[in-house]
Structure formats: C-alpha cells, structure tokens
Length: 462
Image (cartoon, rainbow, N blue to C red; front, side, top):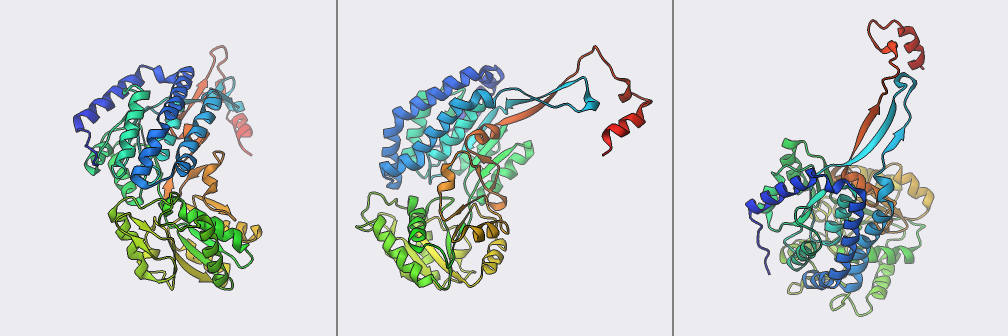
C-alpha cells in the first residue's frame, strides 16, 4: 500500500482556508473549544478499532499495546484539557509595581493561529493527535501531516479527522518528502515537529525565513545505567520491557546499557530470565512484539550486530522484519551502534568502575531525550545533577512519559519545547502582556524633565 501525495495547490488552499477560519474568531471561544474536544473524544472512540487494526497491519502492534501507548494517552490528554481549559485560557491579573500605578496588569493567553503538526511513524496515532489536543485547547487551527511509512494508519487518521472536524479547522495532508518540503516552505504560526534531529534542522532552516516558533520533539541515545547496588531482577525486567516496547522503536527507549563491572554477568542472566518472563514463547511469533517498520529500518538495525559480540538474542527474519532482543558485548564507543540512535531491539553493553566515568561519557555526547539510572536514589540524584537530558527515571524506564504533570520534551540535540497537559496548551499559545492605565490620574514623575528623579531612584534602587 502506498500513500498518494496531497497536491501542492490543495495544501495551499487548506492553509488559506484555515487562516480565514482562524481570523473569523470562532476558535477563540472557550465553550466552542470544549465542544471540539468533546467531538475529538467521540471521534477517537468511533475510530479506535480501525486505528488499532491499522497499527497491527503496519507495525504488528497488538491491540493492548496500541491502547496503552497510543489511544489511552490521548484520551487522558483530552480529559485533562476538557477539565482545565477554562482555567488555562483565563485572563490573569498580575501585580503592578509602584512605578506603574495606577495601572493594572494582565496576562492574556491567546492562540498562535494556523499551525502545522508533523508526526513520525513509530507512535503514529499518539504523536499526531496528542499535540492536536493542545492546538484545539489553545484555540488554533491545525494541519496534520502523518508519516507515509505507516500507510494504513495514516489513511485511517485522515478518515477519522475528516469525519470529526471541518477541514478549515483541522485537516490531514499526506505524502513523502516532497510534500514535507512544500509544507516546511509554507508560513505557519507554529510548527510542532516530532522526528529525527537531521530532519528537524531542515524544518528550522525552512521556517527561519518566517521566524516561526517551533516545538521539536526529537530523540537521541538515551543511556541506561545499572549500578552495583541495583535490584537486578527489577532492573532487568523494567529495562527489558522498556527496550522491547514497540521493539525499541521509541524515542525514549533505553538506547545503550552502562553496567557496573561487578554485576555485569549477573545482570545479563537476569535480563535473559526476565525477557523469558515477558515472552514465554519467545518474541518471534508473539502478538505482543512489534516488528520493524520497513526493510530499510530492518537492514540498518541488523547491521549493528557486526559491531560487537552477541551475548543473547541475535536471530532475525527479514520477511517479517523481526529482530530478536539482543545484548551486544565488546562494543567500541566509536562503533556505528554507539553513534546513531538505534531505534530497534539491540542493546549495546558498556561497563564502568566508577560513576565519574559514566558522567564523563554522557556529558561528552549529545544531550539525550531520556536518562535512566538503577541503584540508590542518592547516587541517582547526584548523577542527574551532573548531566542533562530531556527527562529521567530513577529505577524505571519510559514511565515518566505517562505522567501528564511532567513536561515531555528534549534539550539540545534531543529537541526544544515541551508538551502534555497544560504545557500542550501553552505550546500553541502566546502569552500577551496587557497594561490598562486609567486617565483619572496622570503621575508626573515619568515625564520630562524628571523633576521627581530622586524619588524614582529610591523606589527602584535596592
């Protein structure tokens, strides 16, 4: 199945229609936004099964995993927005300094306008529709661009959006990189992009001509450290789960293992046992193990096996794009598997004697999207305080993304901006400063020739 490119003139017409609709002021009414969020929730319920079926078709993603990692998170975001959007959007009065009296000061949260949301293939439903919750709550229009690498999902998303919203408000366009190029060369009031750092640079360069604000949700090589005093059984189970979720095709998947040399062998055995517990019949024919998205991805991930010695796993089936979860030993820090985000179920293993080595290694590389540490919380906080990442977990993996009260986003090479819950609303919002000054009083100290300058000095100087 192949996606058909949306024609350029169709894209241009949609952008113009959305700009006109936004200019009408219809999206600014909070009650109207709530009705759209309710329609969104009802539309997702209606299209949940077709979307799950499409995820199975494109990624071999089970209905359970599809709900937990895709639909369930979106339902939560919609519920949160419905409950709180009135408060989020409310005009807020802030304190005015004495020198500004008798004025009153306000922060007005207003929608940015016509926005573009571009999503990748790995969580194609969640990463397209979760930002859309923020766009709707903020009062923006949205043009959505899903990935062509998951064609069944992308078509199901288009049908759902068309069935749920008028196209002058929310619409889907489809296609390959030529469509992306046209979109990135089009003026928007915000671009929300999830994907690779390489493509993010293309987005930034194209939108620089308009000085468009961007939210970039990227990735990177997220380290997973297991210290000598970690609970190895729990660590192995949570790490195996985090790596196997979506077959490692997760931007916050633990990318490489850093094991204390004293527990390396014990951890490897624990990992094998816990993996067998997650998949008693193995991953090859499991309905709960996702396959790689396409042949090119399969070939790239499989090529990493030559960068080390297989400790466990290593089998594969190209026809079904299945790769067995694999621990890879004797890996050079300069090997390709340690230079690129793996995005697959291969786990390079490094060892350390002292946490100072870990800190030096992590900080010498690009800032990761996630950081995982297993061991004593005191040591974890010390290491977190000496490194940087988009997010972090102590004695866990992945789960920080499930708490909407935590910001989700990267730093440096792993992204800019964050979202989830109110931060999604804020991502699509401009906070406008408004000063309201009455005319009944007109203090003279601010006017030339500044007769009361000494008084102003005393008021302002600490």
